[in-house]
Image 1 (cartoon, rainbow, N blue to C red):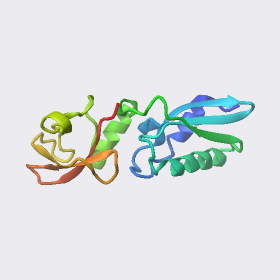
Image 2: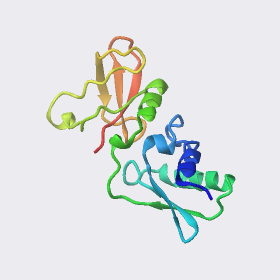
Image 3: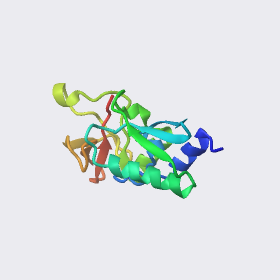
Length: 161
C-alpha cells in the first residue's frame, strides 16, 4: 500500500512548468492526496485563477503517478481557499532565490496602490537598492525589478494572500 507521504515524495519530482526549479510541492499547489474508493485523488489549487500551467501540472502529476505504478488517480482543482504565497515551502523560497527570482516578501504588497513599491533584495548581489520596472513580469505572478547596483534585471514572485 502506497502512503500519502510516498505520494508527496513522488510529487517532489514534478516541476512547475513555468519555474522548473520548483516542484508542485515547493510551490504549494498540492493541497491534499487521499484514497477514495481505491483511487488516489490529488487536490491542487492554482496560483491564480486561469493559470495556464495548471493543465500541464495535472498531466505531469498523473504521468508521475503512472510511472510509479499508480494507474487509477485523479486530479481535482479547487479554487478555495485561494492559493497564497504563504504556501511556498522554505525550500522553494531558497530555490527561487538561487534561480535568480526574488521570493515573495512575507506581507501583501499593496504599495502599487498607495506608496512606493516594495523593497526587494536583488537575488544576484543581495543589494536592497532595487527598483520595480514593471508590476507585470514574465508571468502574471511575477513583477520585473532591476538592481541599481549590479544593474541586473530580475523577477520578483509577487506576494499573494
